[in-house]
Image 1: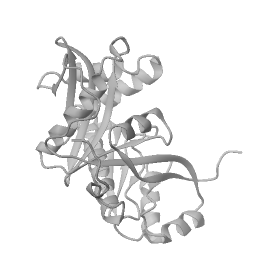
Image 2 (image 1 turned 180 degrees about the horizontal axis):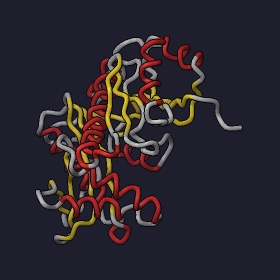
Image 3 (image 1 turned 45 degrees about the vertical axis):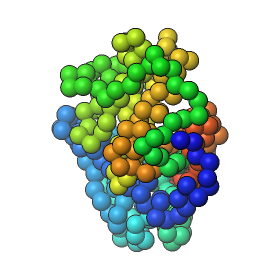
Length: 281
């Protein structure tokens, strides 16, 4: 199935934003809880304030921020203080990734409390059905399946190897992937070429939304259709589980965004990431 009819897309409104933001929040809360279980000394935990999930996953983790702030309820100064105190306990920076669908009063509150914008993210989505097929044919030699019990290390190593051009990034990603593959809520997929694992991808399902993330291909096996196979297989699996929407996030204007658009995704909205404190000179 290719997406041709405009009416097949739901409106990009508050109702959609709540579904998308909550799915990402649940995925990340699952990650934080898994880190806390595997590494209790990390102090990883999360709290909910006015419908937003505030995560602590380590001072340098990209998950250490809030998700869904201002989407489910308007945020008061007292509630913002509660969130900021949560991060002060860890001496961690305070970040909020804000959807433009959030209550407008939040923008004034961010300004009053000394926040500044630092990053943009395209939140993308597309409708899916059980008979979904992407416009580009998939390499039939590449087979995709869920990782089996006992293959957690294989999945993590395969996923991290996709970042091996940078040794520092590879070490960081392997840490993240070792936790990702052990999440109770998460789904971990392997792409194999002639029986050899060459790519890995993750997915989280919540409220009929499938969040796609964590996809990478080992450098020596790129340009053989692994990413396309992973994408189509995950979309079909999600539809079979009752999902009607798939989502992913990308840097605006990036190759990842262009690839997503080629395969039927469109931008629901662009989030702005805000940081507490004065920007560096």
